[in-house]
Image 1 (cartoon, rainbow, N blue to C red):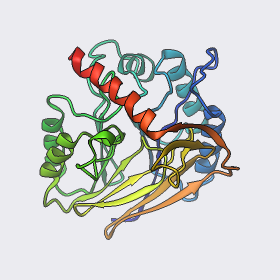
Image 2: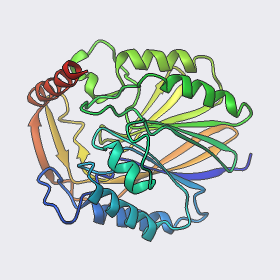
Image 3: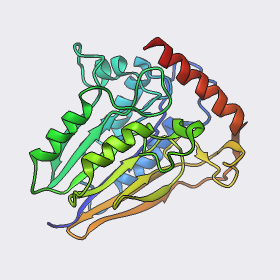
Image 4: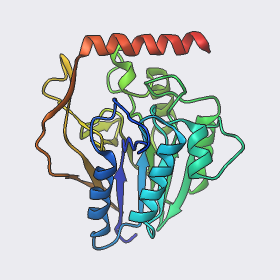
Length: 289
């Protein structure tokens, strides 16, 4: 196939201009406009854009209306494929972004074939949880989707990356759950048609070789995790980027495109304190199931 160019954006964290949000640490609307200006200047034009979740910061309809208007303004002629993250809320997303009024509780799993690339988006968000999970039926859907285009290379997109370390239960919130990671591994085992898995959630650029599959995480547009301090602190710095990708017969090429930043500190918490808080959220969600 001819080289196919695309863009990966993640963790947009768009806010509602009419509502004060003390947990929005940067001007994500301005960040999106700046990134989309860079994308609009690309030559050749990308065939598509994938957005891997945390589209909004609070998951309210006003934030999705802001996102929809921004994307219509900045990328009117480029297909944009979305899935959701833990900051998103399905009902508001469906009502605003898809003008949908039924099945509002269902995972936002989507697939499309664009210029010879089979793009598959999996919703790893679960209401009330921070970490990633699959719901009943999602892996069956994925299995059917993988079989539906046997001759095409496949690009998987989901908010939470597969877990890399199963011996750190306190950190399970930063990835897809350990159980679902193993289920996904079993489903993809031996496949040679997976170009890669594109993810977000942890707010730093990271590339992993996961059982033969490239797994790529982007910083996103809200804030950048200070990976130097991450062993003790969740320290968020000013920073945003997007990922420019090319799919070829030989595989996947990715370039990280950072935005100008002074890397100032936006917020910082002790990692142990943050982990305890997240574990409490997860426990509450489990008890409610």
